[in-house]
Length: 143
Image 1 (cartoon, rainbow, N blue to C red):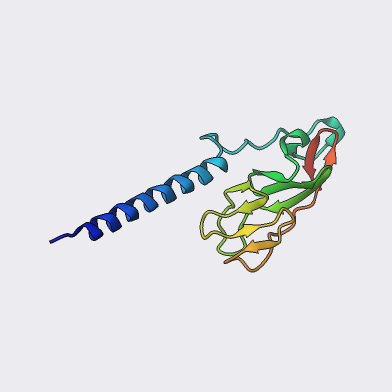
Image 2: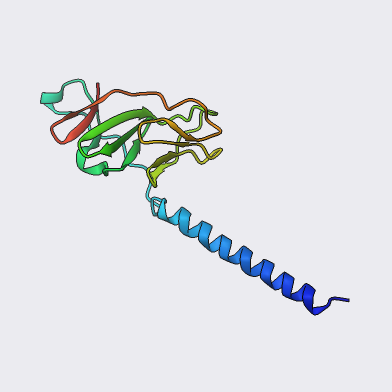
């Protein structure tokens, strides 16, 4: 026989679980790409930038954030300061999923990296590999 105390406990458990699910969904939505795929690789640079590929446009990389384009993550920790990093997580080789909340995030096992590539949260123990980049005009290109 189920008494009232058991029913109250079950209702509370369901309510807490529901609130937790809503909070998790909200957090994931805030970092999502709204169903958009990752940006396509940038166009090959013009005559002034011969032999270089555009990774991103300067205007596409938010201050305090970054973008992922293929095997490169470009971040802008401070206005005008751009850092290129590998998009391959150093834990198990997965591609990082997004740059959100001031970190580069790997969805495979939960590793988080700072905008400079340093490990913020494991299981990764090594920082992301550096990929030298430079600004040419309004574009960020590989060095």
